[in-house]
Each structure stands twice: as C-alpha cells, then as structure tokens.
Image 1 (cartoon, rainbow, N blue to C red):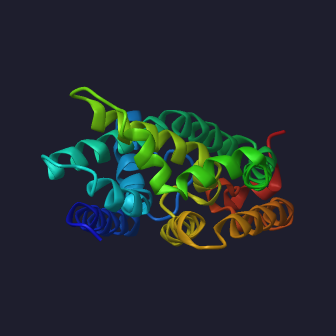
Image 2: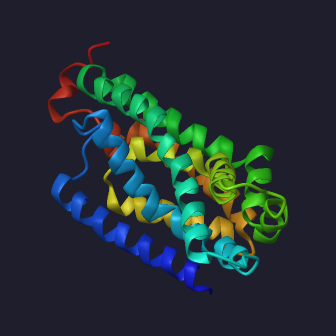
Length: 246
C-alpha cells in the first residue's frame, strides 16, 4: 500500500467518524430529513467520502507507482475528481428523497410501493450485463492505469478521478439508491452497503457475490410489501394505518 492510498483510507475513516456523529444526532428519518438542498449535498458528499473513497485504494496504490512527480498533489486531484462525480449524484438523490418524504406524509401505501420498487430496481440492476461490465472495469485497476496513462494536460488527474468515479457510479448507483428506502442516516445500512461495494470490487468471487446481493434485493422487494418496517426511510407514520390518502 502506497502512502497516498493510505492517506485516502485515513480520510475515509475520518469521514466515517463524522457520519457516525451526525447519525447519532439525527437518527433514521425519511426523505430529506428536512435538509435544504445545500445541506443535503454536503451530507451526501461526506457519506460518499466515507463509503466510496476507501474502495479506490487499490487503484490509487497502483496508479501512484506510475507517477514521477507531485504524487501527493496529483492523487489529491484524482480524489477530488472522483468525489465530484459522487457529489453530483446528490441532485437526483435529493429529488427522490423529496418524493419519498411527501409519500410518507400523504400516501403511505404509495411509499411502501416505492420501497419495493427501489429494492426491485437494485436487484434487477445487480443481475444485468451492464452491472457486470462496469464491475469488471472497477475490479481491474491495472486496466484503468493503462487507460489513464494517455491523459495529458494540467487537469489530467482531475479527469482521471472523474472518469474512474463515473465507472464506480455506473457500477454502484443502485446500491446507493437503497439508502432512500432504509433512511439516509441509517448507519448500519451504510456500513452494510459500503461492505457490499468493497467486497464486489476486491473479492475474488466479487461478481458472483454481486448477483447474490441482487437476489437478496429482489427478495426484500417482496418482503417490504408485508413488512414496511424494513424500509424505515419509507415507512408510514404510526398514525397512518387509519388511511393512506390514496
């Protein structure tokens, strides 16, 4: 493990400590948790720093060995580019969280259906060839290093990070959407999802594991229709069992 890769792990650990502190104060709440767009984006960026940044350590460790100058600065630019992509994903996540929040307040039955749809979408995507191709790219740091060796210009490392982030986003977006169903600040769910992503990318049997996760998500899509409590981010309020507004 190179020094820059180790620093990324330390940054990720610091982000986890910050997320854990915030989660203890907020608890599991549906939707946007009353946050403004700016606050939501900032919180999402912190979460992605904790959950996703450590997963690129193998790539960074290999990429660092190809750099001959300004290693720390260039890896910093790469990390910024990577996180910019994941931070941009906060915008559609905020829209979906707003929808979830309104459904929980006014249409609990529709909220339950949305939870099932989120789990189903995750499960289906995990089993698609697109997921397989994106995961294969993320599991091949050497392939990325060879590809990025042709990048030139002052912003080349930022572009490397953004390109790598785009592949990671394409690979893992469906898993991240699950956070809307289980609650954005559900710390246990964040740990599980981060572990799933890391396992997919680094374990020898990661592709097979990815498919198992897809099957589990499909099962949860059915179970949540009968046990809405497994999706606290989209669970009806306690008083809503007298009417769902539909």
